[in-house]
Figure 1 (cartoon, rainbow, N blue to C red):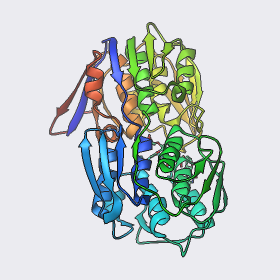
Figure 2 (figure 1 turned 135 degrees about the vertical axis):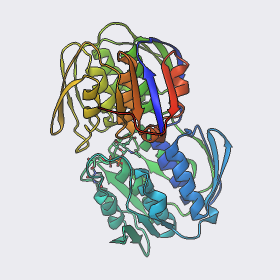
Figure 3 (figure 1 turned 60 degrees about the horizontal axis):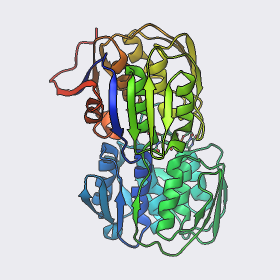
Figure 4 (figure 1 turned 30 degrees about the vertical axis):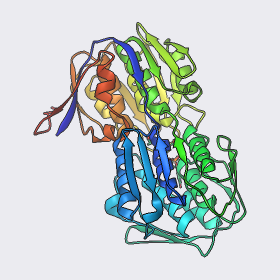
Length: 425
Ligand code: EPZ
């Protein structure tokens, strides 16, 4: 079993280069299915979720060629069957994007019910609502969602919930539909804008991405393109939190500062010095952090994907903080692991009350999901002693070379192979 072993106490100094955005990559790669040509994607992160979606496309008949570590050439012309079975899609939530891409291209999609991080219910009712309004019908049989349409006709879709996935999937289904589609109450995340820019680089007509109203005029064909995806704002935020936990002075390079605004504002509120440049931010943190309150919101609010990492920081801040998870039902499973390190956290439904302690203590913990694993890393870097993090496959889904990036700025972190689970008692 692979584990991360982190010994806290080292302050961090130097530069960390951010990779391409996971949540942009896992939307844009399936979107290539819509193309009638070959697409070259650049700045793709070298992470497990990308490997999974690549494997799915290959098994469906597409050709996926790694030009180098971060560039992929994809030719979807070999796809014969618009079917993605459970053995392919069970590991990853973003496999649901295959529904919109296959429906948009072939007017048919058979996709196994999505997997992905386990925190509360992960519904797709808004995705299916959008497909239905465009003219598709669906049924669920043998754990597969089977969708089809004689044709897709543009229409007006009001999402009941601000949903990244539903916004992505309706965009994918609508770009080749007949006529205009309007998506109201759309998600505004940076990866939604990145997807729209990618689709438009293929010849689509998508306007308004980044606002809550997206208008799409359907086109008949989408050509091959070359496209470089945006940097990962959640990876960047995670490393900003890592510097705040360990203390130090680090330049986080290859970012879009505007995408980090809510994270930067919150860390400044906690007493952190952050200098912004064109494509980087410098994080300087000395001394104890101040307490604060956090409520997660759809973009441009504080991102739910940074909630575990900021909570980890607040466990040693000066005073009591409140963390309100307003996006997901149950995204506090990591709290038990922080408690094992000595954190004082009580959770009541969507609210965590965090009472700052002097310092956490290293111990064996588990990564209960992707961002929970990131929170364990943040906590361990500032803890006294050594922390062993198990189940790091979750972390490998979304963070490229976390050991290399943190070691390069002075963290005492290594990846070990052991034959058993460490005694957690
Ligand atoms: C995306 O998940 C991200 N995943 C998640 O990041 C992120 O936490 C989430 O958006 C919110 O920003 C990817 O982009 C691959 P949603 P998604 O649909 O699309 C409810 C990470 O760590 N909802 O925006 O699944 C849902 O239950 C991952 O990188 C419905 O009710 O999230 C939730 O409460 C974890 N019906 C809320 O909307 C639906 O049909 C937001 O979900 C769809 C969603």
